[in-house]
Length: 409
Image (spheres, rainbow, N blue to C red):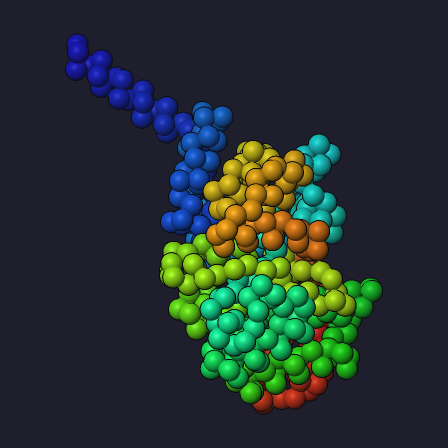
């Protein structure tokens, strides 16, 4: 009899577990630093939704798009997926995401600008999560060796470039590694107050003399050895590695990546100070990439998937995520007012958070929406690389891109 009761109890437990809804949510490159916080979210959601078994899956940034498309094609997508704004543009165009149905009250939880970033043709395709305006982490020892004042870092892009040249000329070390690989030059154009598309959004216009001059500035820096050789190939990843190794004077970064410097090299972290991202006066805007949660095409229970996306990005959880990362900022109105974001400190991470909090008013995700984004972005990337390699003049490269874009637009 006792054996029968134990067996019955085990069967009941197995049946109850089998009846639970299995859900997954995917994030980008948060493990292992933020495992505890992600596991807390899983536990809390399961507590609020006892019929759900929730699983967190972390995916490298380089693999997330293909992995998601494969999961959608196989009919086994996660309930919610973390995507950046530029990823979401491509996946919306490929029909891989479901629109959300938000009430007015739910919309008002978020700042209008981040929510608009994930709104396509009037449909909300995702809810915003975290973002971090760029800052400049700089090595005070290299500044001193180059004859620069660590108490007076560059405040504009123009003075930053002048400082970078002085650093290379006097120390042999690189001053900075601009974020110009991929399609990042599109953001630099806009930060400089230069348009990418005309007002109708149907024609590319970034081959004016002003655009050519801006691209020429970076081509010249590259040709003359003022920026590292693998700038176009490895971009931000290489910049973080060089800075942590003491071979780069200034790291243009989201403040969350200063944590990586702290983990990689305590000595370099100890001589690091943080300054605001040097604006281009003409634009007075800082491109700030936004992360969000989307619901993929083909989820079995759209309302439950949306409930999960809203849970992950609610006020309480956005604030808690910021407290754990120490350096990211919420996209919800209420969480952003917390005094946590105004707390300074002597260490670089605290400085980064305080500096970035003052830049939020200039922060804007400058990702543009246009048809055939994947194809047009490749044309842009290939031609910019040709200009950097000296295979085309900056003018020829931009003319060729604009011609190809306008044939498609």
